[in-house]
Image 1 (cartoon, rainbow, N blue to C red):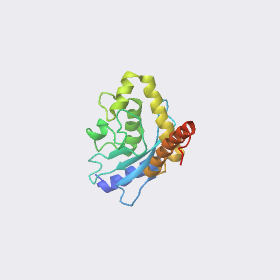
Image 2 (image 1 turned 180 degrees about the vertical axis):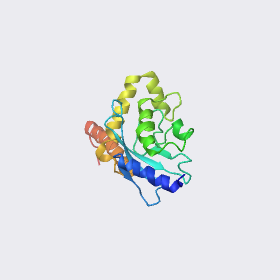
Image 3 (image 1 turned 90 degrees about the vertical axis):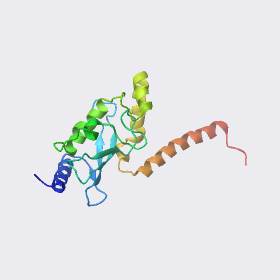
Length: 183
């Protein structure tokens, strides 16, 4: 059996050979960022997310920690932290799985088949259950705003400035309608 460090290296190589853009902030190979494309024929198609992967020292015997960096509207993804609720990663992980499984099977399945009965985002779950068309519109809006392929390399600080720009757009349109206050 190979050592955890060899397995980590092998899994990273397989991921990079699978045409995923992988960035490692340091050489320790414990934290990496992977660009993940929304699955075809899903509400998330066309979107690209930067996914943070943290590999514990005991990887592959212990599951990686996975979270979306840019915002995603999904019942099983926490909107603020990006953490995901996925049993196969959180509870039933096995050393037989690897990082390619995460990006080619587990995450696409999460996006294709959301589970509103076990939500991390209660608002998304309620909207999905009670107004499917409004839910779909909101997912597509989040994809348009936060999962643009050209923005994926940006840091989280850049994304918050995008949000501020959106808020400022609303503020400036309010000023246009109301006029600027007198000095």
